[in-house]
Amino acid sequence: MATSERTSRDHDRLEDAHLHKHNHSASTHTHIHSEESLKRVLNRLSRIEGHIRGIKTMVQESRPCPDVLVQVAAVRGALDRVARMILDEHLTECIGRAAKEGKIETEIEELKAALDRFLL
Image 1 (tube, rainbow, N blue to C red):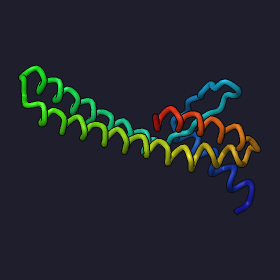
Image 2 (cartoon, helix red, strand yellow; image 1 turned 90 degrees about the horizontal axis):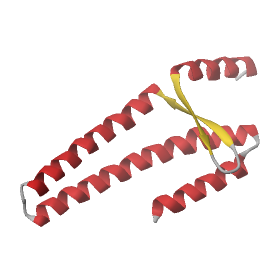
Image 3 (cartoon, rainbow, N blue to C red; image 1 turned 90 degrees about the vertical axis):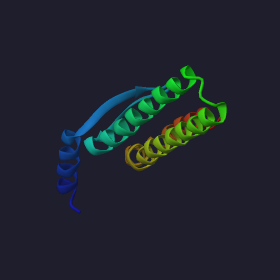
Image 4 (cartoon, helix red, strand yellow; image 1 turned 180 degrees about the horizontal axis):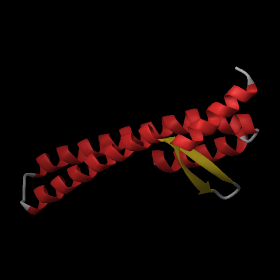
């Protein structure tokens, strides 16, 4: 693909994307999320939010502990799936962009730190 075609495609993607910056200890970089990706993540989080409200109601109504725990486990699984979606996008978008910009080492270190916090 010609450089001008790639630049035009990247520009179009930026116009259709959701941008936000992250400030990390050593750097600032922009994360680009497509509207479709952002919508998928937000929809899942909204469902999780509703599920948590349901669990709160179960506790208020003194429902059996095993039933509540099953629902808590379901929410944990749903949150893990959202995290995997975010990680997948980070790997394909942010890591790829960092490699093109020659900043891959910094991005990988930041990813390792985030994974350490996530996996604990």
